[in-house]
Length: 142
Image (cartoon, rainbow, N blue to C red; front, top):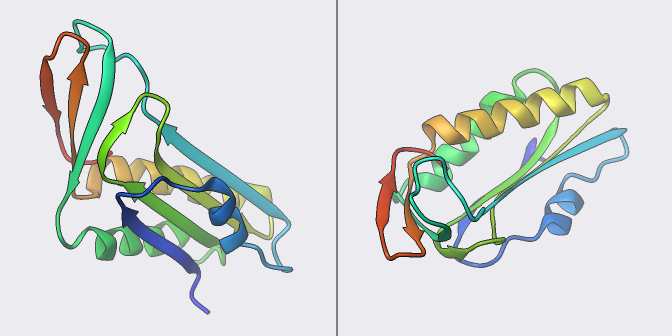
């Protein structure tokens, strides 16, 4: 079985519990998670943020899988990761990651590495929608 148990991009709501379940394994004593949610503010926004609209390149799932494999490296960790696309309201989950490993340090390291590379390397773009109707495109990554 692959160390990447799930690498998906979807327009459906993300489920943290499903990601944790995907990395369950009797060899793993540590599980870390990361949840990225839509917040109601941004340093560049003049008014309150009301939504984010995510779009993705057609190869996004292949790239997400590769980023997960790279983050795992030689650690033996297991990963489940998803990114949502479409219109997300404040509070909606945009990214979910679960990492299981034998030891906590590896789980934390893989999880942090993966979210950081998702932010910089995943071909996902977002349009920020503000309360006054203003929109702004934010670059590559989540």
